[in-house]
Picture 1 (cartoon, helix red, strand yellow):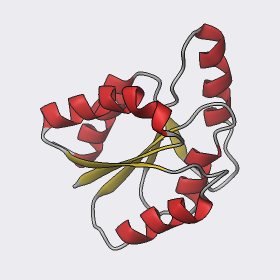
Picture 2 (cartoon, rainbow, N blue to C red; picture 1 turned 180 degrees about the horizontal axis):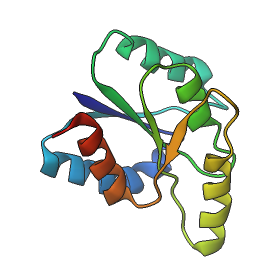
Picture 3 (cartoon, one colour; picture 1 turned 90 degrees about the vertical axis):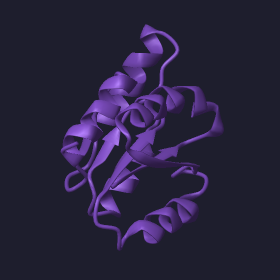
Length: 128
């Protein structure tokens, strides 16, 4: 069981830490990467390829603005993808939520706004 966090940028680390602190509390292993679907799609694919033979993975994507990362991960993996977009204020939140909610067909991304709830969702998916 492992949560794999993929951030669109290293500037998302403070948001990711809110998730990883809770994952640590729940005793869930995690790893963290920074790779943009727009700027580094091959790096994202490499992360997915590295984990493709694992049995229990949940991907957590952290990206704002034009959130291609969540859909890209979901479309190229068989594991659940939780999108937990970062935001600095209410206007930023609305932009980031909408870009995460609007995914193409066959790219199921579950959007979770609160980082603590994101970690709790992972815990429940794993049944721990």
